[in-house]
Image (cartoon, rainbow, N blue to C red; front, side, top):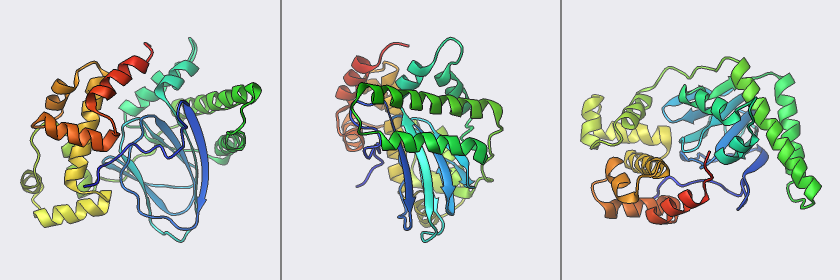
Length: 289
């Protein structure tokens, strides 16, 4: 059984705190929901795409900037696979964003305030998008350079990109998502009740639809099953609890798992390491803020 996995795909190399990509595709497959353990800043340039973030859907327009915070499920739904699809994006860990901050500009706090409001999308013009793309392209061009000067320049480029995003968040109005669809409401309900018992029978009764219709529509929306979604959200919630210092056993119960064995299997499938190893690794490697 597939589960949602942390998707890094070499966008952040091992040991690094940030990375950047500029991609152009003529064909595109239908991706599943996925998450990152870091922030993703995604600038849509060309194509015909819907961006789905948890229970919200956006009809992407060229020069729409999307922010995907850590642990937030998202996917790009390409509506025309034969229309050229171009995007430029960069990744930054929370710790790096904290390190970029200073007494005058608290970059991480600015972003996390916006993410608590679910202000995921901003429409920007060419005067703003062009400098972002140029910085990303310069970063990509020099990403394999090991000279200390080049590494410092990469750091400055990424710091500049983070500051540009903060300026957008503070000076521009966010773009509203489309009116919720039925499955958007289902996902919102699941997210709200993720620590409680959830079954297909419960969901179909709650939304007055058959289990067959629920399974079919959910799969079309998310490209994963209802069960996979619930399982992955519970693992993500358990990870959040462990990051806050709650040990794996209590975290598994508080995130809605009936037994530790089931939690252990789901966690290993999603993270490729045990809950205890994750707990110890996180608290060993995360500097205090």
